[in-house]
Image: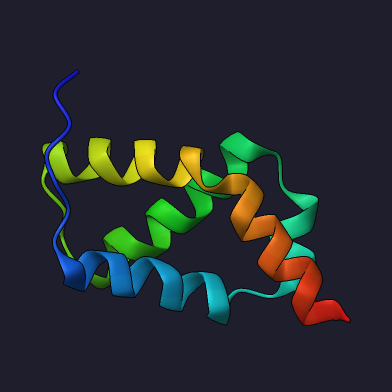
Length: 76
């Protein structure tokens, strides 16, 4: 699978979605479901190419721990 670089707009949208999603939702989902949820939300805001979907998918999987840490921090 070839992974293409993401542009800064997509990265900003990803982290904006993470901030907008309720912490409880981010914490209760499995890694796979968390990535699917965020990817679906992103794709509904902006049409993504297959290459972008693959890149975002890989990026999100590599950041699930950070996403959960941010969600926990928002709860406190």
